[in-house]
Image (cartoon, rainbow over the protein chains, first blue to last red):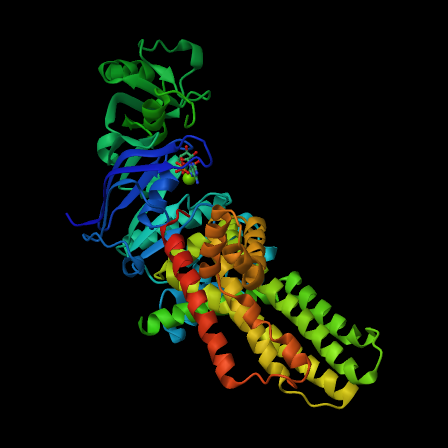
Length: 310
Length: 264
Ligand SMILES: Nc1ncnc2c1ncn2[C@@H]1O[C@H](COP(=O)(O)OP(=O)(O)OP(=O)(O)O)[C@@H](O)[C@H]1O
Ligand SMILES: [Mg+2]
């Protein structure tokens, strides 16, 4: 499988400043992003996600480790032409209008003047900022800046997108739009690496995740492998039985107060179904439960405690 | 370097001009200078013959201060500002090199200073013409020398700004300015003076040979007195240009090297 990015044993220490000890941000991080895949980088605050992404973009220098992009060890300006980057909390010179700003980034990306106008208009519509294209950005809200950040990352039609918390600061509708936008890009063959705290979003768009904590990997792999189905079943009811009357097996428990979803272990599934049916319940669906990414994340990271950094 | 690199540098330079046009401090410095120049005839003087010289000297002095202030303020604030606002991350993640950014910003600041000097030149020349009936294009020579000195100051301020905050950058550049203006006199005496402490001698000597003699760029007095005593010729101006280009190149090289290595 062709890899777009591979990181081996990355170490990064930030110098603490005058007579202060250095802070370790990355301690032997590994990461592989195969072509065409969407990979999520997860981890608690201070885990080293932003540091990793900045190393990839050449904004900071790791003390040790190897970063291969597109199969070569070039990290210069040339390779960045094929990468789109959205920094954490993007910010711009606010006296500009988005149209002028995107033209500026287009020029820096080496695009032809003739293509810039069309690409800019297209991207502003794509991120839902078409109407505000000529409004100077000091009138913008946080989420609007985030959308412009996404647009600038896409300016040169990159084949690899590196996004640091793409949906942070967006309203619910904005989050949906970003998810659809990323799914669209993914469908078009773009490789994506994104860091996020939105686990549901990651679950919906990512093929795989890497969970990091204190600068090192604690779990990684395809979502299908990580979130292995459990030995637990969920029974959804169309019509609930009269509450008091049902005798349920020991492992069974209601998942909601209205008693329309019952969780039960595999061994007692049939027994539970039988007693439900006897009491006149109508079964709509029975399915095996898959762990949510949130549950998995808490299981992996939560066991390490909640302290952030040092 | 190729067309791509030139375009990137041009884009960065132009962004400085746009940025300056949105800064109040730029207009404030410019307006203040012009207003003060218009007030120079109020300087008391005994006889009418020297009034024009006095006025020209004062005006050129004011113009120098304006140019140096612009150079140092812009040079010391642009990089720390972009780092603080995090706009640098978007910019440097595009397919540009850091030295292109660095050089582009330098060129942009020099362009802003040059434009301001052209504006003051127009004010000066009209003023001298209207007030004294003298058409004096020779003033341009003094402004050219001011621009060259400002260009060196920009490269020094930018070098300081790679690691230091704007305030410290401005102070360091100010120190550089003072040291380079007194070196011909003060440092020379420190280096050669009899009975000096050898440590003082060594340090004075080191700085004497390391620093440019910025006093050379101050031809305001000669120009203000209508070049009656010396004439500033093309050779002298070319020499000044060569000195400014050399020192700017050295400071730009060191600054660009450090900027290329630093974590953002
Ligand atoms: N410029 C810096 N100087 C010193 N330490 C830093 C710097 N940037 C980050 N760190 C430290 O490095 C560690 C990792 O930070 P990083 O920003 O990569 O975390 P993150 O995973 O992106 O967190 P978040 O989810 O909060 O964005 C933290 O302990 C942080 O304190
Ligand atoms: Mg982060």
